[in-house]
Length: 143
Ligand SMILES: [Cu+2]
Image: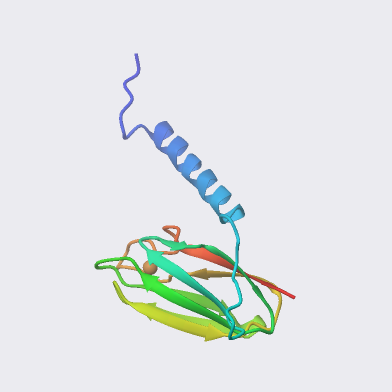
């Protein structure tokens, strides 16, 4: 009989492969898309909850050429997070820190249609970044 220990390399490989598969599925299907509604002032406004390590909602759809306002609310007690979109080709450059328990508001007007990832690039020492732990989402800009 073969004893199964946590250090069994085949078992570890199996678990790692499984985790990579789950991660691939999560990225392919980033959750139910939320079409960000227009407020009477003409701004597409949504609240996004930042937690360790997630955004909720994590898939936002907005219209190009109209202002967007995202209220970023931290649900954490200790861990600071941020909200980053780094898309220079689409003139979409956002980087906002959100302290634990704090709220921040970002405003921007996306001009180019496309699908742009947003993520938290915080990272503690040699640990994985928050993005690598799953803290990312998708902004889809439609014409
Ligand atoms: Cu974070």
